[in-house]
Length: 236
Ligand SMILES: Cc1cc2nc3c(=O)[nH]c(=O)nc-3n(C[C@H](O)[C@H](O)[C@H](O)COP(=O)(O)O)c2cc1C
Image (cartoon, rainbow, N blue to C red; front, top):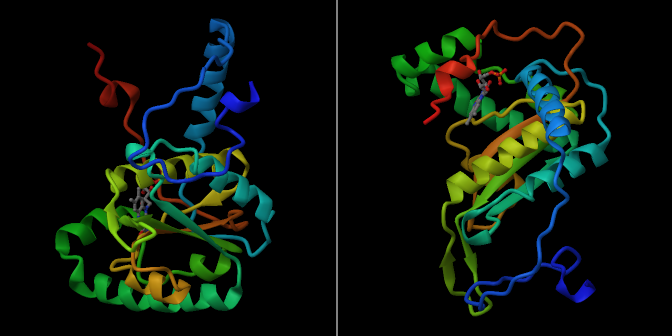
């Protein structure tokens, strides 16, 4: 029934409102189909790699928007959806982001990270030079909304912001990969410059910069081994 569905209603805050429910009756997927889908998805996800060398070729912006829309379906603490995704294609803005990121990364790699962190990064072959920020045709900069402002200017806390945004970013990376695009989650530290360059409001804190594109023709990735299922799964 049209008036019972939540799908088409524009979003408004539900903070403090009473509980309302709607029926939820997704079609049950037959077991054989479920097994086939799961195995195919597992194989597709095994192919995902973090890419740091991008081709300059443009990507269809709608694919990135659709992936962001997928990410925005993520579960979130108290359904507060504490995320903002900024899609940056403007070359000058990407240049500014690269310049500021490389400034911070230079200090980090020169010692701010400390020897233990630098040792952990060594197998990845990363350094302070970040060509992906300008080579990739699109950047998705993800911000966490630490709180929201009521109409009277009162600050309301958001709950489980790190977890919620982390899940959304995981869904974004999966959606991009399954749509045929490559990505990198890049976390220059500190990331305050992203709020300045992109003019984001005070309640938002940068979470990651995600260059998106196609791998360069000569792209190489670190030779990494993933833990086996046995090593990550405990069944009780
Ligand atoms: C929270 C988080 C932060 C990361 N930050 C960076 C980063 O700043 N720079 C980078 O090159 N890779 C970064 N990565 C990517 C990881 O290095 C990469 O996922 C890992 O080496 C495994 O490689 P794979 O994604 O190809 O499986 C980050 C990943 C995560 C989850």
